[in-house]
Amino acid sequence: MKKFVTTILFSLLVLGITQTTSANEVSEQEDFEAMKKAFATTKLTMDAENPETVEEKIYDENGEYVGTMGMEFVEFTPDGLYHPEIGTRGTLSTGTNKIKVYWYSVLTNYHFYADIKKGTGITDTITRVYDEWFLISPPLSFTSDSLQILRSTNSVTTPAEARYTINYSTAFGGSTKMWIYITAGKGLYQTGHN
Image 1 (cartoon, helix red, strand yellow):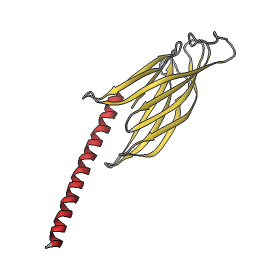
Image 2 (image 1 turned 90 degrees about the horizontal axis):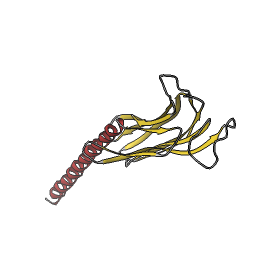
Image 3 (image 1 turned 120 degrees about the vertical axis):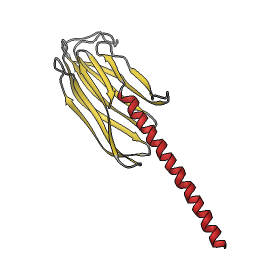
Image 4 (image 1 turned 180 degrees about the vertical axis):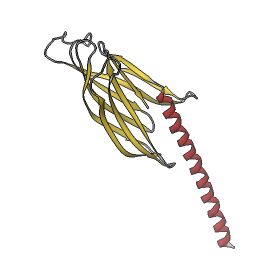
């Protein structure tokens, strides 16, 4: 009888843990999907002539905070052909802007830096992307990442573009790929998320 009662109690305990775990996994999957949907529609723009940090808190359709996306102006390096006023971040001529592109949330945090050469007229060139960084929380697991320049120089119709992509596997089975990007063209920088 004692063995029978112990078996029943153990079965109830396992059943309770299993149901709690399943409910948590469903909730985490829903949170992850809401986060992806919310930031897929957000884009931020920075003026290359007067670069200032742009940042936006992103909320899902229920008004729940899911993360913060942004671009931060880090520094300007003149190219030596023209000497802008020293000590101001005002109007820039030719040279290179260093921009940090980032996404921070509960599940995923990542950023990278891009050097964008601002030429004369409407020409912008992404010369280098580097110092990518990430932090991933369960239920996600890191699989791989890549940082690449997709188009180095803008054309009349298409901006230069760089992208930091992270591939994840999820605790609920399956995998996904998310990225943040920066585009540069016609004196504007833009960032967004897939």
